Image 1 (cartoon, helix red, strand yellow):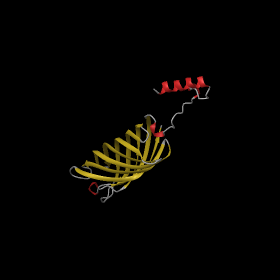
Image 2: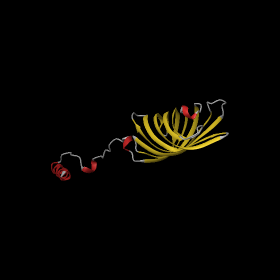
Image 3: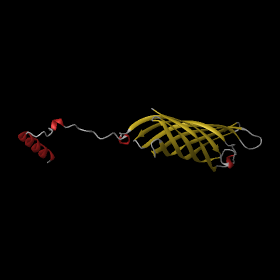
Image 4: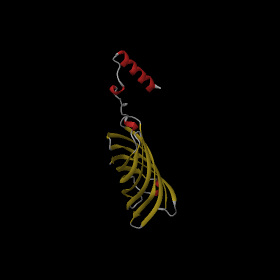
Length: 197
């Protein structure tokens, strides 16, 4: 209907010699680009982190720093991101029994996380990770399943880089340093850096 009205006005302008614009003279204006309306973008990323871990008292391991790295495969939808990760973390600490003995703890990780942009450069995230712990000392070893819940707050100084703080609650069962299997709860906090490609 609008097209018919425009053609009639144009024909009337030609007949009366009025300077009305022709359809061919009109410029099409595209709406301003919304950076959040972009299409899904797949990405591969690497996240390196350091965690100060408070081990459950019942496992008799001294609290200390651990370090890890995750390889991420994800999808970016603008304000929302999700990824699947695969990685490893390690702690080199001691038992808190006398005499002290060195303990190596490895964590093999498989996780899923989501992130939401809440300001122009601020993101909040949550995730769940599962896998196995490998506790190892001179005369005792144990492999234990775990599940952990993660929360994070981060900033993006550049579109492909995020830095922030990671909060982790880990639940596992193990017989390490014990005569029977027991449920343990470990809590960790530390910085992380994520780089996406």
